[in-house]
Amino acid sequence: MQPREIINTTEFNLVIKRLAFQLIENHTNFEDTVLIGLQSKGVCLSDRLQQVLQEINPELKINVGYLDITFFRDDFRRTNKPLIANETKINFIIEGKKVVLVDDVLFTGRTIRAGLDAMLAFGRPSLVELLVFVDRRYKRDLPIQPTYVGKVVDSITSEKVTVEWKEVDGKDKVLMYSSEK
Image (cartoon, rainbow, N blue to C red; front, side, top):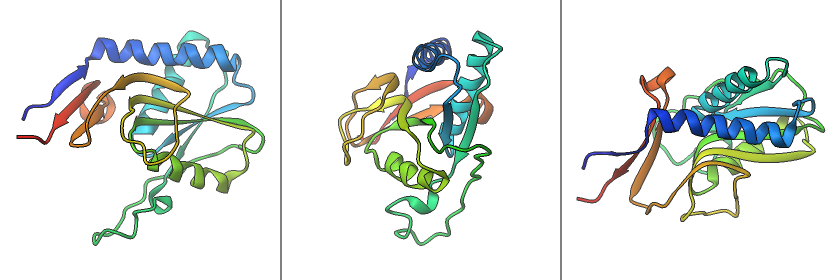
């Protein structure tokens, strides 16, 4: 079955701008706030947010890091193929800071739990918030809810939602795939 586009390029950019304004509303000058994008596509979102935040207010100094969670996942030993980790790049202290964890799609919550575990290796933040581009709200394995949501998508387990980024995939859009015949 053909994928269905649920967010086009125009809507995509509006969602990112709205999320950026929500961050400014809650964190004003980002003096004690950092963004950490979860590898791999949470990094695309955190970079884009930083770019939009700087366009809105060029005086903002926003620390953005990348966090790989490969070996913190609860299912990393359940595959026969070798795992390839992504880059972790956090060049700042998170101890006592407000951390906004950034990911593209929230579904079961297991990726976010792994991100929380991995993040603690870098210090203990004073607050952790979650920002996701898409929230698939009907299949949580863990009690995790986002603070900032780009779009809520009601989907069933057999469906898949992917966020495509122009930097990686050539075009900004969100697609929903159905595995039903």
